[in-house]
Length: 441
Image (tube, rainbow, N blue to C red; front, side, top):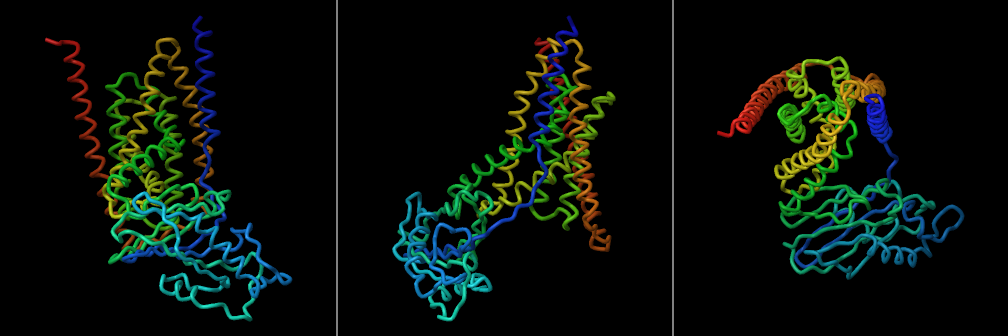
């Protein structure tokens, strides 16, 4: 009877682990196209100046003379392209969509560098192309200048791009927002970004980064497998909570430090972090199989949590552009989102594991089987990421590098001490709660 009840349990857990492994993918590099733009706010007008590569607006057919664009007859097509662009890139003022009151544009050569600055881009669009200019089909740019009437320069503005939405994240809009009396800030969005606030309020930034943190942890299969390895052999909230607290405190420390640019630089560090994350999964899975001392697990969890924090920071770094002037709020909100995601996973995982422990007597066998499958997955990740790391040049350990290393070692030791103290406090509180339940008088 025990075998009959154990076999479906083992098969179900093995299937879940294999499914998770199949969903995981290494980070990929994409061939991308980039549109460059500026959003300039003036007392009564808002200006959108944008440059589009011609190959991303293939639906706009310019007249050709052989392989060259017939510039003498291209103006009507440019006008149609400007009209379409006014609908594809939408701007809002306090939630009200803006309608362009004027538009001008022209074609530009691939060698044109006038979009390095807003003033240069506006001046270049205002000048006609020399008649002897040669621009080949699907090469060069379409430069556009759209003007929108606004109610107040102090309003909150937002933007959305739907240019070639079929290209999804392959087509990016790098836009610089230039409000009055401000040097401006840059961000990169795609058609999948939706409507993006150019100058978000603190509560908008907080809400967006909480959602981003939840999505990041739920989409990070390697982080979830590490969390699974942490709690598989643990029974009861008293044993789980200090471990998860240690992981949370540790990754919060490095996440915030990395967001402020305190993490080691150089191309070697990201693949190093990814390799160590994979190694942490392998280690925890092997520890489950061999039956290590779970009373010391919080210490190993804290060490690996520091590395996982760097991994979380990569998901945050490319989105800090949407924080506006609310960097601290966005950092804390992102971390809160990660914790909400972890709590949601544990809320589903812990009752399921508790139920299975009641049903299946061969609990130890289930832990070994699932941990072995997770270790196999983590091993392949570790080898693949290790190969990338091996091909990456390492920095020379000069005086500056040694000083940075010393600062991080001191910081890590301080963080480990803080995590140890916090984990003990949590364990003490949980023990007191259990004693109160056992002896209510």
